[in-house]
Length: 587
Image 1 (cartoon, rainbow, N blue to C red):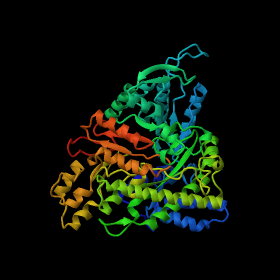
Image 2: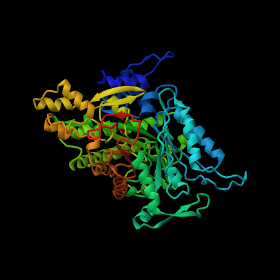
Image 3: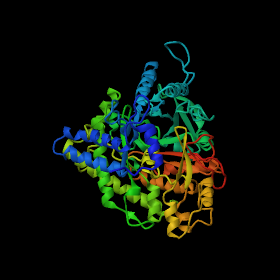
Image 4: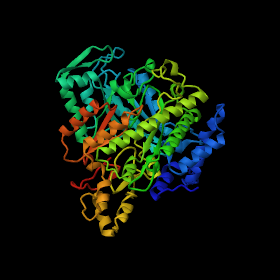
């Protein structure tokens, strides 16, 4: 079977994923890559008794990938069956308040980046700038100075020729250096290899609501270092996010709540509190934990004819159950980069079954992303996936045993044991959605036609549903009209385009902010880990808009939140002139 890949998908695969010889020539076809991955991941079956035959599982894995119904995270596609054999995407590393710990962590991060993984860190335990250092009699330089060192080191490490390292830095909102951290990326070009997020507490959000003073605490002894108005700190965060999209927020008390307010992200609190996430924020993890991710293509889980498709529940069930087995196998066959990572990853066996192609699913169902029904569809689909992922993990626990920490976990009182402490995660699927030829994660489509910059190359893309929608209305897309659509990326302002296309092909900048947030909250209610989503705002949005979004995200039980205001950065991965402002946009 030949994979139905677009030209852009083949370009990405040849650039990043396929085997090359020493002269840089590609020596592996995409179908060979999928076969390599399927064979390697299915080999885990021989380690367990009572399960299906490895050959049967290999064939199922291969069919799912060749048809682009399901794809695992990038390191799995790159490394499975090869020398590195490091297949996990997400890692969180511990940063303790000593030079030895800081630079041990930097070394560990370099090893992970070299294998294709991304890293997250909490710098909250580091003493603030200006603190006395007893051993030297000098003053501490503070967390931000060490984040800059990590950033420079990452810049020097190319991930095995595949991609550069990605990082997340988290600092608690009650750290004395919080304002310096919030402003660390004020100038574009600062900390280019880091996303930054503020670790928000319930106490801080209450102080913001009450316009109360808020204590900043010395991480060494918990003493009050100084007191600021909570709203002053919050407004600094809001301004930074309005100015250039950072910092985002991680709601630490929501993440660590026993019920996760919905589903627990930290089912093993006896091992510690979660303080950081992976680079895109969807995987809150304990120190040294890793998580392997994979996404089901919702655009392929439909029955009927567009624009009146319905979810194909049987196919979605099969794909979800297959994804759970695939990802659990990945943990078994992966070669962990550090012994500490191996110990806790194998003890908790966290996996992240997620989705991509949600916007495409809506279009083919005749649902516009900016109508209330979109969130209803998302909630129904994710609730189904969560239930099936739980059932598949229960079945694996029957075959292979529960995750080793199960008996001490918050999940021990449920009816049946689980093989995996975490089963679901919504990742952004930036690159694998290009390979699958679908919309990314749960995002709206970025544009109907646009340019995507990948490894310095501009890839032109046109949404595959544009022409069929117009054809059904008996309308022909002329070259002149396509040029107008490509210029703006939008079809809603173009009256000549048939109404069904203008209604359904809504872009991320045309969806109201609360529409974005409603969809994110709907998926979060049925996701163990967090949801990676960017709330795209028009260029004319104000700090008031950002403030409202951040407050509402907390009220809705989101575990994190990120916004991006159109044209607030000069550089971007996705670019097109906006419908109204005609400025460059980023996603």
